[in-house]
Length: 523
Image 1 (spheres, helix red, strand yellow):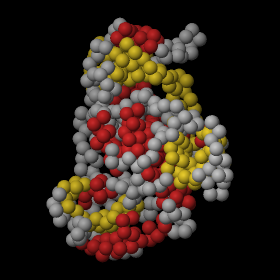
Image 2 (image 1 turned 45 degrees about the horizontal axis):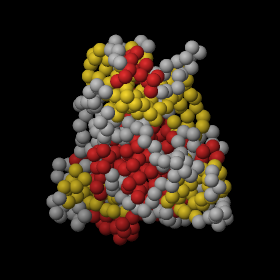
Image 3 (image 1 turned 90 degrees about the vertical axis):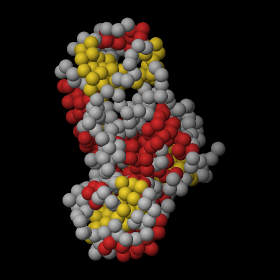
Image 4 (image 1 turned 120 degrees about the vertical axis):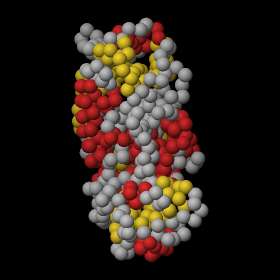
């Protein structure tokens, strides 16, 4: 058995194989980073849990090359059928008026069982030759000068240059680091949930029964014939404590709140009791060990931001970690992960708390329901990093450095084939957009200096890699005034790195040289 001193060293070890860990592993693997991913579970979970990716996460999954698989395996969220006193009173589709736009191709979240999303991510990871290692529980961490050794419960040791804890709210990695998980647990806001099979219900709706005594929610699970997500306020014993969930307790809750026979529920498993936790770590990095996803923050499920915030953590971290382990950037670059994502976690705790409050008020009213939990902010499309040291000054009337980079339909100026900016961004590279013919020299100089690390595209710049913006969607999305020549550098995580006038020919080189310097400096 390898000892900590002789264990083979991989570049990155990921602890936890949920959506956060798998997203990070896929992003690192496509960058040719040697990555291992372990999980303490003896087998892959089959729980439906999270309802699915929001629009921003769908953009990330597109960049990873799997959004078509996700869309095929799931479905659009169904309309919500709301009941009072057992009778249907209204059907509501929160996304009825939503439409894709040229700058945002995904206008709504996508409903898919979490186990199925994880399966798709594992399949993608396997295409890079990486597989999740099960039954591997991390019980110890030992930091060395240039690596970290993780001790497993079975006595084995794994060594890596960097370790990322993506192991959930009860994170062993966070506990081993001694990082506090400050916040609160609200016992009054407790629910029971699980996967059930049910007969006699229309699968075209998300059924929501509300009364003064509680609620039962049943949402169809895509890809199944009779599977549903069940959620309800718990039964309580004489002392007021929640009764542990079971098929029988679910049947009693179902009969009480719906007026239908409890025998409509024919199976219940993967049961759990959920309490509203609002907690976050006060730091995301201790030397060569980092935290992501629920290991770093947990919050109310209102707004559906839990899994999505973890996926977006991973996408922010992946390109930075890859640059560091491959020697392209100093380890100080990793400090920008916490700098950018910790404020997002704090905001997420606030917005989900507010959405929960609004939802609890809404369900007291006839016609009110879970549609109150969503808002434009819960799409994930509005979060930027304006405060970041990676976002130097630069703006247009529509964008600032740090913003999410919008999509836009274009055409290849040579072949006439339709394409999109997201297709130009997809992959592990920076992207430089040059709007206007005055950017041609800067595009050529950047391509000569950085090769495939920075892919260049002119938008009406008159070059061979030009994109034709025939309908003006790209200029509109980026706020480029007619007749102006503007450079927009887009990061590998599809956020705007900088915006500069074409006459500032050194701006892109200065930015990239800072990232590539032997000692990372704030930009």
